[in-house]
Length: 370
Image 1 (cartoon, helix red, strand yellow):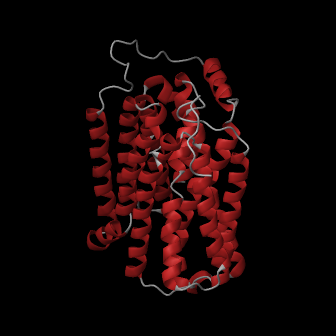
Image 2 (cartoon, helix red, strand yellow; image 1 turned 90 degrees about the horizontal axis):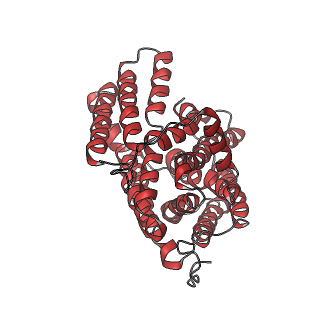
Image 3 (cartoon, helix red, strand yellow; image 1 turned 120 degrees about the vertical axis):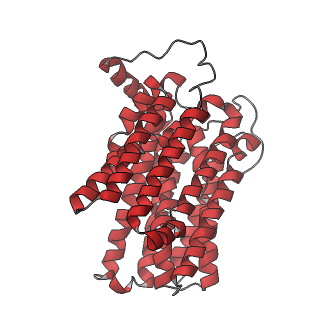
């Protein structure tokens, strides 16, 4: 339900980002996110819990795109990739906190208390955003406020975004790139380490933490590469190819030693951190007046991919074991890694047919990743 609502409101969120700006929109939606977390803590039935998740999905719908939009306006050209990489790396702290710290808190104080504290943390983050960011764009001081558009103008703007040259290849890779990491790290890495290699909860938690740290390091390393080599397409294709090779090893190697399996999972999160370059590539496709709508269109593709891939891999696992109470067999995981890899290969193939978007157009590309 969280993802259903998040997907459903992406295009309206894009329009609002263009209309009223990230600062006011994030502030308003933060109130909704806090309310949803408190509703979760107070839920007494399945229906009320589902409704609470829907409210949280609405409240969180603009956070990611607001950060991308503001980076795009304050850091243009070759500085954009580095700025995005720092924001993305910092955002991974949420993944770390949502792992064993949240589990430990829920065990010690109860899951309802954990969601109350999550509401307080969200409120604090929203307040920091409101008071720490005084304007939505560098030229906001002295400029007239944005004027709301008519429905016809809104629809024409969305149509202009959808017709942007080079959009389809970027959408193709955006749909699968983040989904690969979120599906492996967020869903299957833990069960794989348990069912195939027999790791206990503490050991699995350490591996997942190492995977998250590798992702942070990978994002920080990958962010500046487009400026270094003056190419975004080749950075994405290199990162995607390395990710595909890692998935191929996981899919084709029966019962790898546990150290090798852990190494491959950690390496996967490190080399699959090229999503920041995809976002920078996507930003280059849209004029500033349509930036909110354009970037939320790309985010819609990312969220759809991150929602569909876990379901698809779950169906693959179910084909190998009707009852997963005792875990899935090793061939099921290799089949899942193969399906994930095939999805990524398709995205890379479509992306490879599109044009590059060098940070410094007109300047000769430096020899680098291929």
